[in-house]
Length: 250
Image (tube, rainbow, N blue to C red; front, side):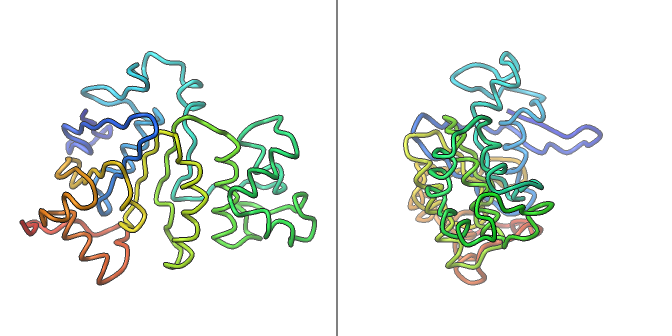
């Protein structure tokens, strides 16, 4: 599958192909500009590929109702979306009509119930525009609770640990791991600590798949993934901005 944004000459994705089955976890890794976010946009059908197809259960997304595509995917993006309203409203947005028991159960599964109980009005507390009254970790857990309550068969995690320190990043991955069990999951991350246990890792560089395999496979080969792993070990998770060196160790 290949795609380029309107008005540009460079392919954002070129000849990209991968498959993730039910209950499997596929990790997309690479530094900023590799094409990871573009894959997410195509999966949610914000755009359509110029060549090739994106399929859900073997069906081209263009042959499905857009509402069906979006209902099939639960999303936790890099930019945590928290709306102006109560804690209860934000969680229930994932499933309109959810019962109080379902809302609390989702909060517990997302490790959010404890901090919600400490808020001035509990689940009735107004969180402010973009959740400004909450910390970054609290906003992330609230978004995960909303994802939990959706109970969709496909899970998309976009940079789940961005902006968090190492300890918080490891803890924030516990609730998504519970949700990932038995679901088709795509994890997009710079932080290789969050993708080590993926069924398959796909490494993108400048819109192309340059490596794929398990954590140990490409690491042993010492290519791009190995370089990125060593970079993580020295400097911490690579952030958006830099690209891979022109000559990657081989």
